[in-house]
Length: 625
Image (cartoon, rainbow, N blue to C red):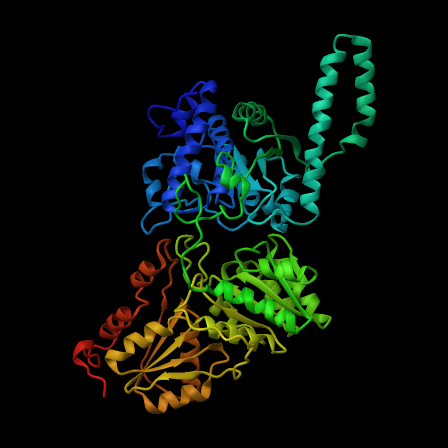
């Protein structure tokens, strides 16, 4: 089928097309998606797998009146392209441009903002119940991936939905992948459901044959009713109260439309099991969906090329440290909530398979599982993104900290994450961890210090978080040993006068740049908790003013800890606390965002001039003594 001459601008135009045009539209949309993402980077293979499903949903349901809730939301590029945002796809994940996830302020078609896993069923059920309460005929659909079904929240929602009389549809996008291959008993169960397709196909063929002999057909029908439960028992979804349909081919757009048309007229909770292929339509992504999950820019004709960067990332530093420490200590156990690649644990999983545990997208379970291991004398290391630790806050407090168990939390993606935006930014971990008794919080400034502080954290007998950003630091040479640093001690990196800049984490190097022109002292604090109180008292004796600098939220963060400590000491001196203000950060290039939020050397000068105009001297006029 030829592609459309002019791209559709809304689902209303899509629904005006005859059904026979839809396969051609799917081909056209997939090619446009390949060209678009190859020029901007972004989530790729997951979006290729949902092209036909996206078309069918918008074709059958009256969006935006009917609500589509996408889970995790990293498969919605086709959805954006069909809902009037095609001409903005070149701005995807750039500052001021389109978000990489559904965003309620971006479009009326984005019914619910998503980016963390397993929230869609709860949200869609809430929307369906609201429609019921208000007497609306609006439909609600949750589209959830198989990996997201490893999270307990999805089952909490289905448990609730199954006993309601709400008209809600859950579409399971079963591609046998999340980012990594899915794990656990649920994946095995879905594979068994897939095998049921062969039973269904055999049944269809036998019915076509037996219909020509009515007595035999009646007998076969009776036998089928007696044996069906032995061959194809009720699914877990039916046991939870849903009417189950599937599995069906998720790349047959006409079959999808027909199935959805029937389901849309049904009452009560419905469950549609759709089988797709991650990377569908682009051979390289089909063959390697993991590498093509979230690539940068690439040439579609060539595919991904090896990165030319020689810098080691913080994630790689952690991965190497984990293997080195595991070699030295047989008690070490590594845990990830479905982020093996993202957290740098591939090598560890291969070298130490018996001590590697991917628990699925189940952050709460990951933390309490680690607590159980620690109770028995093992040394668990939980590799988890800062933003995902938020999902296990009760477990962090109640199951780990309250019992003072020696669990190390390696918090990747602390601070800005760039293109993934506010849903993935690690802005809050200093604030929400330092207030917990027994917890300690380490803030390494560079790659080598990250390795050292991981070793220091591991040596403790209580819980410690080590937070580090996405990407590379300044490229400091790496030590090969497992050096443990002095506990809770900061270091002076530059001696000056007047102002002491207390830097927490990688912004140390912006502080050093700023200090040159103002002759300030710079302290690498290393720890947000415990603070080095001796160093703080020394700085208070020698300096008139303080600047604190962190890549986290100002409210309750490391700077707030400094203010609290100075007050306890009876020190009353001006303190300029620099970090992220009381707002969610944007998506975009990390360096551009750092400049926008004033967390650079230039930003330090500008904030000083605003806060202390009587004290501040224009940098070029102030000479280093």
